[in-house]
Amino acid sequence: MKKISDPLVTEMRREMERISIKRVEQVDWFNWLNCYLDCCVTYQHSTQMYTDPAAEHP
Image (cartoon, rainbow, N blue to C red; front, side, top):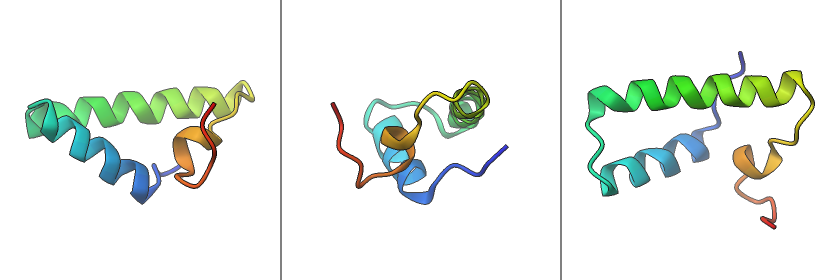
């Protein structure tokens, strides 16, 4: 699996802190995200908007 981009990790961590997700639980969220992005790559779904902070969002 590819590494989750640093800007996305930073953004996710900030959001999880904002909504009071415990640090211990954040590991599961990152594992899920990594699996999700890996699945997107495997099945050729675009992940650019999730991994590239400069990408335009629809």
